[in-house]
Image 1 (tube, one colour):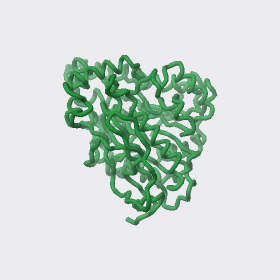
Image 2: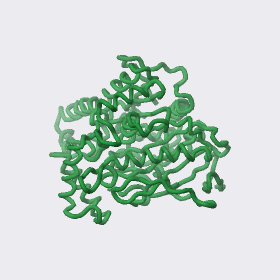
Image 3: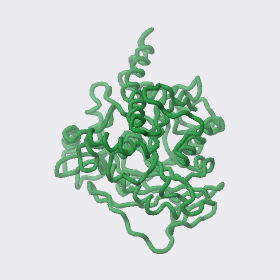
Image 4: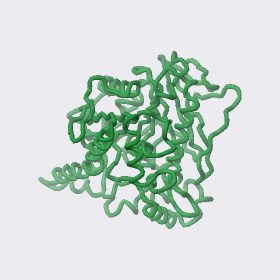
Length: 441
């Protein structure tokens, strides 16, 4: 490992890539908006990972595995920049990554989202963002929190990129914002937010839960009321552990009988100062479509991650003789189409009918004997982390790290091409009404 200094920060380099970790882009009081931090004097160390937002274990850990141990803190507004060692100021296109996790879990500093392979193979700069989650990031409760704080964190991080990324080798005029699951839904929101204008010129939307949508204020306030009743105290002064425990009980209550409601309890809130209502959001999206190329898609069996692992209802259904497996598969298909897959082509049509350039994809299973098939999150090991980081992830079995790394090369090449050019080479663009998609991996 060698030290590299850029932008007043000291990072670590290896194999042609340098990472600057735990960079603070803002600070925030509990339930307060993020505030940019002033520039510092001298050189600061950026070789240690920053914290992730406070959270319980991820509900899909039994499918996608777990990250290396990580720090948790309310003071989590940090990001990591990964760049080619030889990048010149402003010379590389930039990918800003917003992690998923149902707005309850995840972090930009997770080793599973390390971007070394992607940067090494494509020559882009990658910025991975941590933002506030759950109650602390998205609860809306009058007199306590306005909601959308995590969304404001993401906007502030994009503003940091605009103002600072040149020193790390990135071109602020060539920024793509990308996300998966909750991160993808965040990207969809950003496409229709006035404050986001000019912060990015391309977007990648991976497995956005289009069928869930955003909360309206009344919906969000009902969720906030459930949380307050579970907490039984003042959230402005309660210990973080008490808030996270009450958040977990809230999620269980709202999931309903048998946990069949898999929608996140905390979501971005529309019809607000930050995120407009549907009509204004659509108008802004249409206005920007012609100048904002989009890559959007899903996996072929999204709900397998939710229904194919431990589940209070589908565990019993699968054990039913003769019909159990078929009933589970039918539920996966129906719900998967409603929440994820149908929305991909509907969103693509909205953009292309407004003059936009759109490419659609679908990920299939990584291996015919994989226990979770083409489930939610299955594309992540093809893009991020070292292949060995995903060794224990059930969704990649029976692939070994070498084969997983090899299998992801095509996906990384396409993502890099889109970030650099807004195109996928010779792959055709989406046409309104067409079901054709790029099949990956």
